[in-house]
Length: 568
Image (cartoon, rainbow, N blue to C red; front, side, top):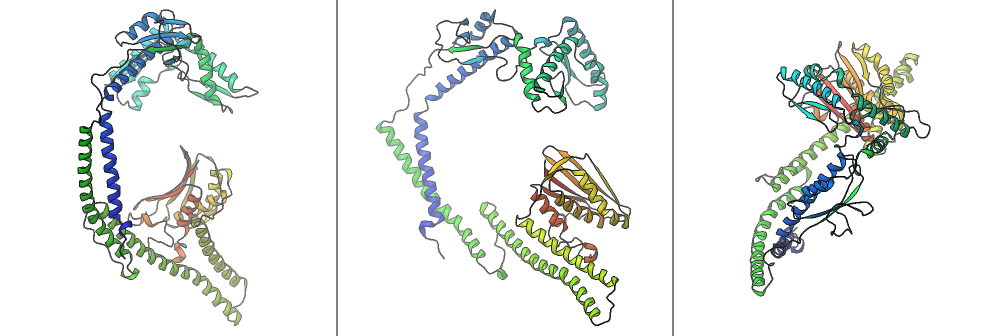
């Protein structure tokens, strides 16, 4: 069936190209008109750079002085050579320094080293005395000499408080770091200790208001650790630091800037009749070239798409690959189409195999039950407890397969319900270990558990089912004398549970298929020892129902590891 010209891809491509060409021509004309604004923007950029430099210089002055006394000379040196005029006033409008004739309706900036974030150049009560500076310098020099003795270059830096710190310019081995950089003198100097104690007192009063009992301990870099429940520690530390440093910095001030008007030689490009003719001629030529090129490219583009359409309309039993003759988007589309067709055929084969597997899984226990019941009915087998136990085992096996299929169908349909609760994960893992310890001991497999006992919000029943499937699978595939290890822990943003075994491992070509239903790496393995083939598929769907995932890694001959990651 041919596509109408109105809906043809060539027509749409042509229309799109014309719109792009018209937009390009219009943009070119507009750019010509706006060419002269470039010089103005450059001058404005320089003006912004000068303003930023003046602001930063005043901010540094405010961070290192208790008031604005003497700032007149600093402001003059900052403004010199910029062609700008500057005025500094307090928040009431009273002039502190600079020119008096600048309009003051709107300030360029507010100069306050404590306004947005605390300026690192503020020393405040942490400024070391002369003796402490010398002591800090000696400690840092000794550490630098220690590093240099081992061939490690070091750099000495003096912080705004006067403390000298040593920094290795390359990677430092852990042993050298401990030997050279970890010393008892790492603690604060007496001046810093007094200031930190004052800050700690203010922070603890803040976090414990009203009636709290938490204790906050501060480090010299103002990091903290908390003993007890204190959710507002960060805010309290920030507020207390500002309150402590406020007497040591200049009060907030307003900066006003002014400068000469920008001027550019020459006038803008004008749209006269002659220039309009040039624009119209160039536009017509561009549009003609666009039409010719677009039609040719469109016809070449549509040809392989028509071949793909014809291939997609073939019957399933006549499905054959489409030739891939080009290495571009169309070629990749053809390759993707062939891959999709191959996966469709594989899916059909898997569906047929799944139906066969399901029939086999259900037929075996049903056949056994029917044979024994008929034998009992005909009097060939006594209906004793042993026969009842056998029938019960077959019914349990049948119920297990049905339950697995039901859980898998519910998970894939998104109908799996979770009953979430706050639990200790290792308690659930211990229950799983105890439930599988008998099977592990019968197989000569050592089953261990290690972890940090994290807490998480999840469905405990479904988690036990998930991990139980992984443990059962690991025990079944681990030879006597091997080990199956469960571990739990928390990484940033995720709860991680892993089940590792020391079995034969999974070949790399089989690893992508381990979560397929009814799939087995060893095709010769019997159903009696191989499970239903649904455990790993159910486990992955349970992890995804918790908004997480289940992945597998394996090394042939060394074992496999299945890792569950859940949001935390």
